[in-house]
Length: 354
Image 1 (cartoon, rainbow, N blue to C red):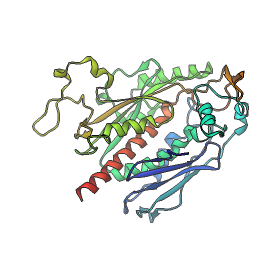
Image 2: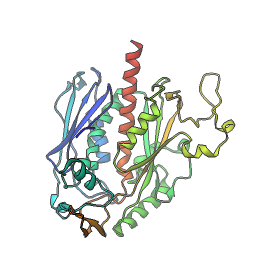
Image 3: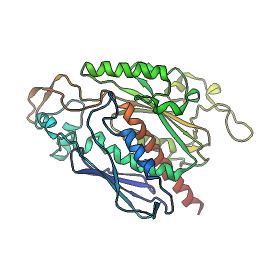
Image 4: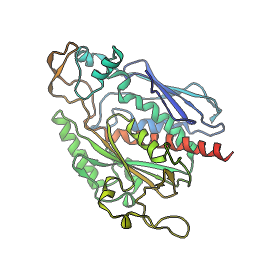
């Protein structure tokens, strides 16, 4: 299976399955001498782990990261950083009912057709549990990036959405509620709605907004390796993501060019920021902001019709422990992937300057 590595210079390779012994990764290219706050890395993992509130999956995993290499006396050595997160609360029997059939809108069918074999326990490699490894690497990237600030928050669940732009948000409130929405009133509505959806045995989708601030001018390459293209690839690689837009995004099509253009200030900043902090694929020092659409979780705790390995129609029902809405736990994953992209481009800029 190819496609287990992300990045060019700041490079992450992940391994492991949802119901295997452990998941983990090897982070290559991290410069030497970075003082790491290991507690901050674990805190990021705690934001993503299951069982943290009543509106997420109740799988109980401590998600404690163990580091095996690349760190000495609290600092990075410049060698590959190897780490693992052990799986401790697998319930593989919850998936025995799909051993010979395929769940709609999951990777089950295409995995079987492509590889001729699949790990049906929780989706195996296709499980969103793999993203915990990304969060570890992203937390390291955040500490490498220092002054660059990365925040993400839930801005929409179903039809319920924040009616303010990100400049009006107090990011310190993101962690004040289980939905990770910085608008308290909207957060309460979102939480109540997710609970209602869960009672129905159904799921709902949502939108996460990401904001990257204090980005220097010059990150990104102008042809195939545009900064927004790499951010898009990073976000679209996250499980359940269906869409990515940055800056004015799809709303920009409603505007005339004379309005959409961002006029310059004398210091090179711009009066507006419809460009979303990126022009010609290169960062311009303005805030980078983007939205990511997540589909409803495919596993619904309801009866459904599907097919088995022989192509026969069969009746099945969703079982196991699943998120009724994935976006609250996906917030740290979005931040992690943004950090990995920026770390890669920062290293590339250093190489070019040399």
